[in-house]
Structures are given as C-alpha cells and as structure tokens.
Length: 120
Image (cartoon, rainbow, N blue to C red; front, side, top):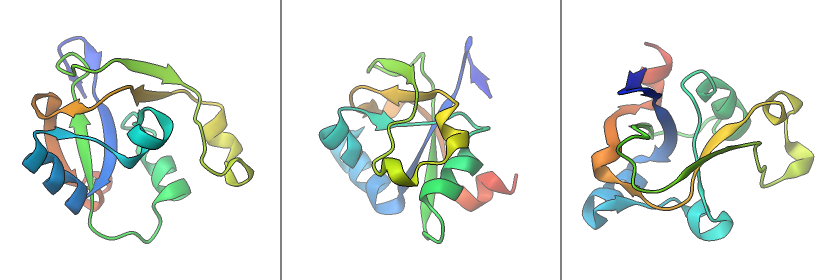
C-alpha cells in the first residue's frame, strides 16, 4: 500500500505500547533507546518478522506508517538482530526500514491487530 509516492512501512507493537503512544503524543519503541532506531518492515516482510520474533505473542498491533508524513528520518538497512546467533539467513539478505526517532502520530495511517492484517 502506498500513500503519496512512497510505500507504507509497518511496525509491530503491543496494545499497551500503542496506548502509551496515544497518551504521550508520539510513539517510541524500546529499541529507540537501546539501538537508536525503531525496527519496521514492508508489508511483505511482516510474516517473516512475526515468525522470527513474535511467535505466540498475543495482542499485537501493526502500525501502518506513511514515510511522507513521518517527521523522523528513515534509513533502509540490513537487519540488526539482537541475538545474531539466532538470526535467520533469509532475513539477513533483505533491507528493512529503520526509523531514527519517534513516530509522530499523524504519520500513522491505520492500526490493525496483527492477526487481522495477516488474514486479510
């Protein structure tokens, strides 16, 4: 899906994480403090990311983000796996969007439960 000229990027979070973002006026993932960026993916990459990092986790949401409305910079980079020994070779061959800063809420086009997005 695209908005304007750029394809949307997606971030998986918890319901609580999204609730905090709405209260604070912006979204900040734990990785922003630890790694300096927020991990995102394309729509096509979501199933692989879920298989690698989010199996059996309930109540996950997907934020669909418009890069054109995003105030923080986005860089497309190879994955930086928190546990390199567990990294899948398939994911290492791809580049992923990393957001270097908070996600302003105006850039979030829609929020859907992960299961709903995967089944649509």
